Amino acid sequence: MRSIMAIDESKYTRVQLLLLNLLSLLTLLLLAPYINRFVPPLVANGWHIDLLVSVLASFVVVYLFRWIFRPLIIPVFLVICGIMVFNKYTNRYTLNNVLNDYKGMVQGNLGAKDSKQLDILSLYPRRVESYRDKTIRGMREKINFQDSVVRNFSVKHSLDYYDQYFYKYGKITRFLSLFRYINSHFKYVLDSRRDEYFATAQETIENGLGGDCDDHSILMTSCLQSIGARCRIVLVKGHAYPELYCGNRDDFEIMKQAIIMLFPKPMVTEIYYHELKGEYWINLDYSARHPGGPYLNDKVYGLIEL
Image (cartoon, rainbow, N blue to C red; front, side, top):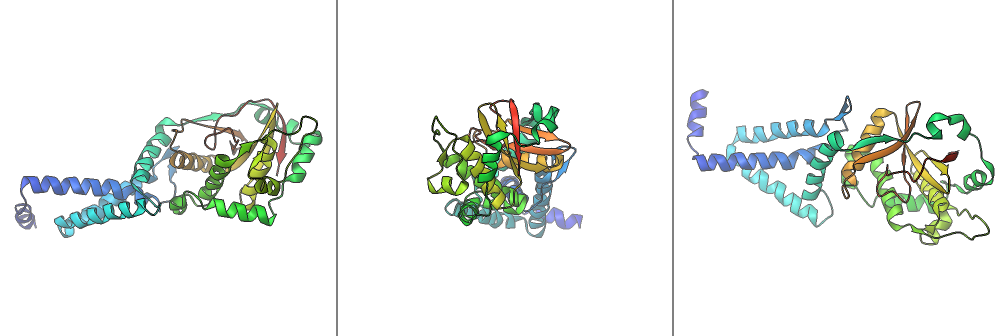
């Protein structure tokens, strides 16, 4: 076997071997993130290792092609490049996604911090579990995730973005797509000075996504719940915002990694959240540029559990 390998190696000049090795490396780097789309999120002691596993799988694939016939790596590389070019014009997985996936993995493991919000939700949960006057009653009455207009709107816009990552993150991609659509189209409109008006999600959809923080919170929670999410509304001094339930610590880590991957600009450096008894919730305020953005303040006085 050694003599055969020696004869095979002698068929190629140093330049040819250098080019074949370079193409093998580029093929591996392009193939790994694509494979990673179909690998479930893997978290070990807080570290995200699914892309590393995908790199190893990509290495095995490239090695097999080289073992069968070394120059076979050339058409393989060209096919992958052709797929990337085709995807660019069909809004699928492109070179930008490859770069974002690598950057997101590094950012998720080393760059982004967790920022637990220390406020009344964490310190005195019983003080915010009960109903709190007209505001809480009024908002709760307007939340309706079973309305057909709300459901159809939510399903449609849950498919607008991130479909290429569905095999990896599943329902999370639908939640984040809907968040992105609502927050990128929502326009702030003040209520009357005399009365606080709480619009239903259907009303806000029909008026072109205009309203105040109460209307946004009702809209976001109603829409997300209509596609299977669990949400709540937090009332703070002078403001209200929705929160999305992530699950336990591991579920939160997966959600955090998905946010970093899918919201690369501007780079996510910190994820803000509430946590109590192992349950994690992230901010979905209209003021946040990405899910888990900064809270406006920690003067919590009410909580609407849904």
